[in-house]
Length: 337
Image (cartoon, rainbow, N blue to C red; front, side, top):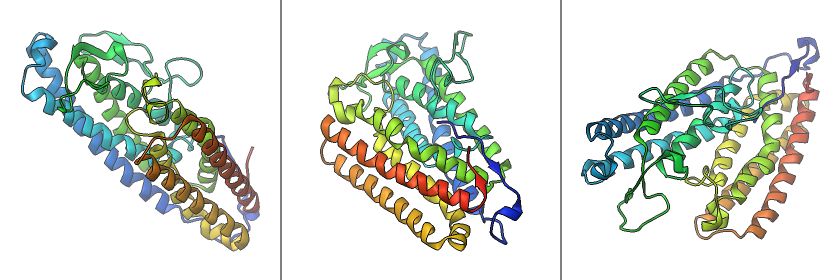
């Protein structure tokens, strides 16, 4: 997701005697990045352990599959990923929408292997092999840990979760890919933290992030979700967004939108109290709508037809909210392109 650049008008046009207090946005961002780093560190440590064991076994993965520590190591790696990924989704709405931070979203969560949305890095594996623009790091690590990308598998079945069944994700990962991707994810997470701490939020940043990201509810989150196992089951051929439902990812993004608007709320209310009430209500209602979907999904799978209907409703809500946010920006003198 890319946020449009914004032009902030002269302070004389803002219609308010004080600047928005956006410190809470930065505090929210830093808190979730810290959680992301903690999960990424757990993943990195487990990936290092797995790589060391594979190297000691001369990369004989069948021999590695008989070692008692292998299952615990891979389970720890998955646990770290499952901590880091939702933490990032809770801040993606900010990171993706702020020009000085947006490249991190490309490389961490949104970038592809080719085209204008391709990631900006190559992945160098231990030994020197280079994977050219492999896609975003959460996707690469997910595809490696859960075996959804055949090229990142070691080619040896393994009951990772220990449930005694042959599940879709019961594969030993390629130790070289896992180590390189986990290292890169941890490094990028630390770099994001540094950049975020150096960032001083402005009204233009926050309005831009909101207006740039809220409209992605349908074409990004729901489109990904409709083609995932959470809707299609075993008919899905997705390689990413198969471990955590995109509805949960959207839930995290909506939380970030609410945190951002909290910093603008006072100024919008001072300028147009009725508009502020409408925006606040729209955000609350969108959050409640997504919460209901997540809660129901935990009980049973939605059909593709239901998913289509829900996508239309969600996008309608997002369109109304975007219009109101754009109106508020105009009322405060922030010109949106």
